[in-house]
Image (tube, rainbow, N blue to C red; front, top):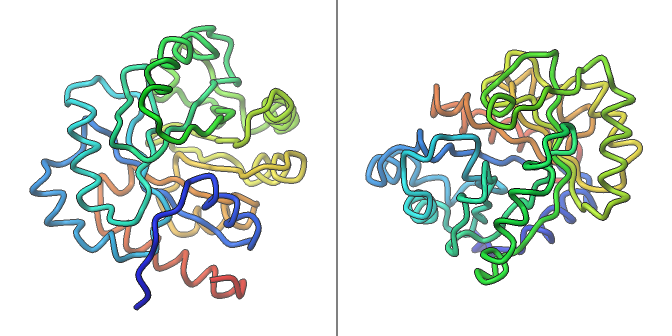
Length: 260
């Protein structure tokens, strides 16, 4: 087996789009992350898998030291880049490979549009990690999840596909290089295929989709709608074996596209 080399995340996402394959990211909530010994025991195999990225972060309560969790994840990641998915300015670490520099443009809370970003900017600059400017949109059927409660914003409804598209396009015109459509952790309703398809058609950048994807059928529909990278977290927390299932499905799906 050829040794896999770690790539810059921007290059990896560019290649996913360029070669029209599908990517997968595993999201780990710091507060729910197992102890390092258990993580290493249960997920030692991950570093040899074709998982594309590992995200660490989210709208957690900060019960565990963030950098300690990132360090534990790095031990199982091997060549897989570890990317911060920040729930606040406090979720930064020099030991991550990159950070999604999110602006929550689906809401109108100034703290999550730009406030938290200003507070974290100098710290991130000093760390020297890769920064990924990302338009972050909360989209579902109206369900309120933890991220909506923390950010004090409401989601764009799946029925408002034009609004979702226009919001993502505005983010692109503002210079954001990635679009993240998120239904919210553990959401019962995922981002609809119609929203994903419309955003992908109109916005010329990698489209990341997460939230509510707890079956292979939902994963299939998300890929078919045009998502470049799918993020799964809550479902793996509930059933760790689901990670192997979705990785296997991703490989089969890419083989069917002749792009694996």
